[in-house]
Image 1 (cartoon, rainbow, N blue to C red):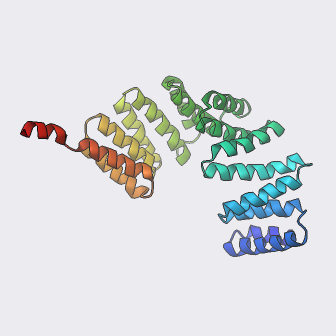
Image 2: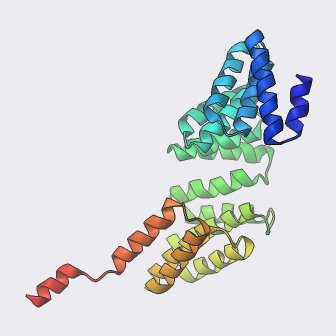
Length: 270
């Protein structure tokens, strides 16, 4: 295993591929080496081979059935893979088992909260985020997601308070830009469009490549009855993230709204 770890440290495609081959050779000789399956799963994940990674990590979990603490490492990676895939139900199941075995693991608890939030269990998610804050009062993930959860419940004043506290962590970090954008969404929901626009401009000053900010700005201009500026913002978002379906959908929806009502025109003609 020592050679495998050395190859991993190179952090190169060649090194990771060679480490994979060494592990596969070891497993072919001895399938009961849990550490080999665990490390192979991690490397496969780094290489982007998620299906193979899950298979290896599941095998490691089976072999580590009598060592659940060691198995938590496998669950963390499995949960992260499922989250990337948007499979929040499966991911949440893994993170739940982690926090049951290790209640002070705030990263796993935060991820559990995100999963619960995504599948609609907002109140349960809030409970998890508050438990994170009890350990780490300035935890950005918990503060930001409490803001999102409060927004989902329609409590925009409470949401604003959480987003504002998340913003104080570091004014220049791109992730904090998302907290500012969250605050903008609260102003938008309360139809305070000028305040929302100021917040969105602040997001762009922090992270000029945040296409969500331009989509949000487009909504503000649409609400202010300025479709030309809204279209310009959506175009900017599409330049930054051309493959994001949200950009395409926003453009299509706005163009449809901007088209003349042909049915009314036909009635006028006749």
